[in-house]
Image (cartoon, rainbow, N blue to C red; front, side, top):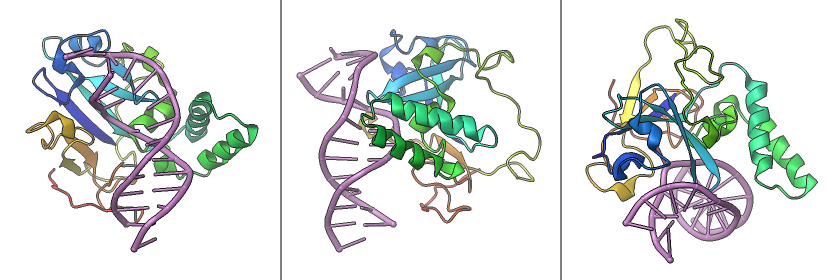
Length: 204
DNA sequence: AGTTGGATGGTCT
DNA sequence: GACCATCCAACTG
């Protein structure tokens, strides 16, 4: 699990920085609601509204470690990929092979990939993630899920892709991830898989 | 292993 | 009309 916090009107990296607009409207509503937006004209990003209506805030889900439903996630990734025009039949077949060969940790290892793996687009904005009847929802993890014994160790670093916001927003350590989890995008904590490592401004 | 550039369209000044 | 809360392929060393 990897997330980033975007908190308050003051946060110059947040979509809420211009006040309520057609796009960010739900950030100014009750917490526990999904906010899905389109980035770079191509990918979608899933956020969870996190504070009461008087304070716009959301958590961007940057990466998830899939524990179940792997086939469905691969199918959704393929569908999303094919949807944005993969002209030739050979091209589609190649993309299908590429995704089917992906390691589990790579299935939702990035903000655009999380939305693709869950089959989300902007129409999911407004869904109540705390309603047990919602097709997309948050649930408490059973103890020990994910193969950990104790509480997970959390690492905090600056957020990714927000240099344009300037200081202090670009440097605030508001990106959080579970130490050692191989699905973490852009450099996890040296953990399991012998993936790329990065210096941590660790904390927990 | 690290860097670069292209695809692509909604959103806000 | 510029600016992106991105991903991937195709480069370089």
